[in-house]
Length: 138
Image (cartoon, rainbow, N blue to C red; front, side):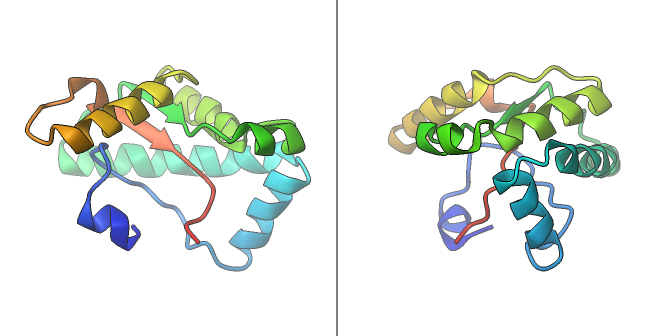
């Protein structure tokens, strides 16, 4: 996690990462995102499902209620023609036997904004959600 997230943790409970964003993973992610090689998102999603299931079982945590892809800026979506996180979210949700939703991330982001103003309030809509993003922190 980045320094800002460590200082002010995001509204989700767990973060799962399969690999470091370094070669050759970086090149595969770029091919997937920028050359629209959609199939490159399927196997990582399956591997992520195995890791999520294993980590949650080891921690005694139930599976996520749903999988939520991060929204992509409309300009990037227009240039790429797709949102890579939706491909992974759909496959991950299928592998976990859970639903996925494009619209739930907007709710989570709004709740996160609310959380910044009311830290003492509980936001139950955020519990049990597995958020998914593929853009690296720069």
